[in-house]
Length: 222
Ligand SMILES: C[S@@+](CC[C@H](N)C(=O)[O-])C[C@H]1O[C@@H](n2cnc3c(N)ncnc32)[C@H](O)[C@@H]1O
Image (cartoon, rainbow, N blue to C red; front, side, top):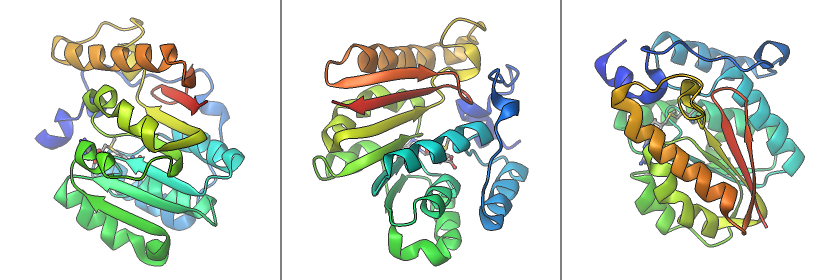
């Protein structure tokens, strides 16, 4: 693993991967192209959503009949392309700040280019400029320390009854205390706990914390 990959908390190898009790029961249905991109990402240790998380994303996006999707932190765009695949009529806006991921995403876009807008830069700056109430489905998957900072803007740009799905909410079991947090990840875990407290106490949101993949917070705007 290269040093940069290790620095991402979700690639931390100091704690074994946690598996939810349902992981083995799900069956992911994806196109050959998305399967190929996921395999290549795994081989190069590029971060991408777990199979179980992706499966739930699909189920939820279809149930919601998502039309205007935002992905915050898209890396090489594997989840973005998968969502465009499954949500036939949808448009997806993706935000990414790392140049090497942006290059790969552009290479991967092909057939989806007319339904996808890739915005390069920092999520906080970009979200501040997005239209109020414009997105009916937001997948939040950037640096976890940013979640709490981004929340006010994400609520603003989410439509009524829109879904905000935040990934990596349980982080190896560190966040709920199931597994001891390594010292260097304690600040990160505090930020995620702050996010959970904020979304579960917000009168403007209905939130469920879900034991899916590495943990999800699913919030619906009232
Ligand atoms: C876990 S990866 C995303 C994986 C992707 N959602 C998928 O499932 O295929 C997180 C990504 O967020 C990007 N990122 C982190 N913080 C960001 C920020 N503040 N603004 C924009 N991108 C950010 C990282 O560069 C990284 O590519």
